[in-house]
Image (tube, rainbow, N blue to C red; front, side):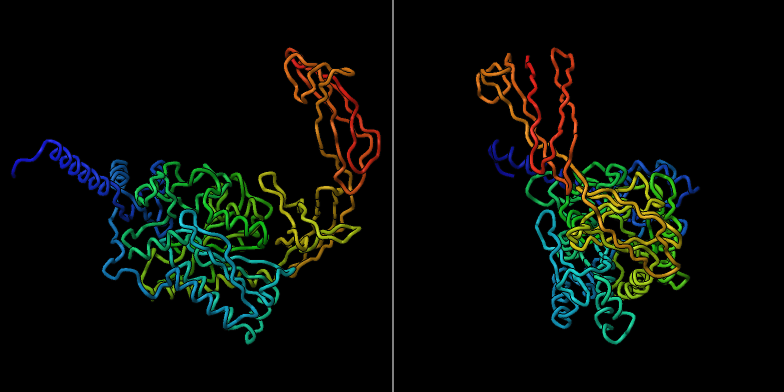
Length: 567
């Protein structure tokens, strides 16, 4: 080597050092799939603190986990045996039998052209970082119209490495469309249900996996720029979308943004999950199904806060019915099902506890990305389970109805409680705004409904009878009720009357001011004889002033003046 200036030499040394560190960092974070062999079932609890990315928690007696070298070392130190499972065959790259993001959109467009009367395509959101559209197909007899009907949701690909969910959604779409008009059962379902299907929720995560030919075969997250360096770093970027829901947010996933189960900086921080939330609140889905991989098992909520519910038998039956319809890949029986009592920040607990929807999560197949041929077989095997949601929606039993203004007939968004099913840990179920419609599965029996809406009197309806099948219709007219709201607080600090100030409309130090408190009626009826308490602090000694409303007016009512000395 010839003579090199000290400056150039320093630059070369820095470059070499930087390259070495990059290599070490990459090696340090290389992912691998292992199968853990626990000695005893309770031994699995010893892994809970490792922020593991579980491939499945339920194939036979094994536990499949994606780990880096540090996690693998920790698992070994805790006495677990494991086998290293083969990675996805990168020589085959991404099997073209699976749809890419672009091919999915093209097929949705083609199907809409072929079936324009019973399909519509909706952009329900965009991805977090690159704003890639999230597309949904709505299937219904008047797909362009928001009708007064039951609504059901299917979605796939919360996680990028799970394209069988996409395939399952597309198989369902094609099955419904091709049999409409010829199969009377399917025709009745499409005519009476608004069926929403989102094949790809994690659009940017899926594109990353496909566009890079599985160069990161276990990738599951989106591409949020966690370290804010304006480039994509797979070792540290991305959020696990199915850990970003706000129900029990800190109970699942990891707070470390380098983790592959990173839950995000705050609930619903990811636009993909906010899109599902907004659609769920708007459509008030009766039931839903979310496709994942893998494990051949169904997860669902059968209770809350570590306790079962009066609804638990219904939820168990719902999950069992779906699982019994889906054949295992080896044809040795059907899928298993596992209900949760403790909640986490995933879709199916949130959909049940907050959105009021029966959602099941199906872990399809025995690997993430099998060959396209096997993936399509698994998707077709899952079709009977998907169809059960529509069959159950048609058959019931349950309670359906509408809430409306008793005078004007206007539909109302209201809280509708089935008293026998209600629990404090649940967000109150609501009727949807456009038609005031509510619907909820219920076992055969007698129920009491309690309905609340702003500006209306609470209404209780007793002896609502539900049969073994079918839907019990309950129409609920709501009567106006009084409601008073705060309107304005006016400061009088001029030099007249009780006030002694500079008249700038601000409570300054050493001023004596007069406060005028304005209340207004916002209910359908007029509030009379309303009283309130105005509290102030004078050298840490509380003072209370009674405000009385004795006049009946429908706009604003002004209370008497009260003096507050500001020190």
